[in-house]
Image 1 (tube, rainbow, N blue to C red):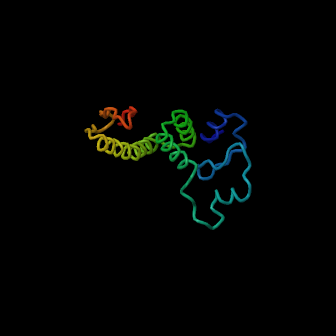
Image 2 (cartoon, one colour):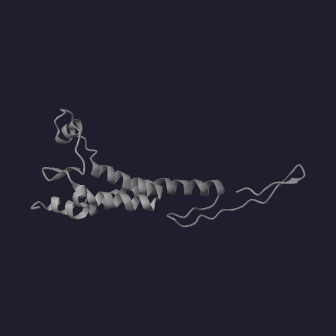
Length: 148
């Protein structure tokens, strides 16, 4: 109980946090006993390069994916999970900013294409794009639906 991480885990999850495995101040496992291979991987005993794709990085990627998918429940879940893993607010903000930039580029490109296809001028950003509707044309005596 002298360790702040242990105290916090027990306060939040109670006995469900046990067993709790910390290595160099980093949470390796909580609420489960690791299989030997997972424990060896976590401790770097398998001789391979240590992966940068940690649980914290996975949550940052998931935050970006939630932004891309416009999924509010996903974003709430993964921000909470990232906080539980000790991810800083600054790192989450960086992931969100990057996701917004990645998402914004194709958004602007499709608006530009829409303006080109409709011969209108697309406004930058998220403003509405005016669309001209061509009048209906008669084909073989039948009225055709309007085209955009």
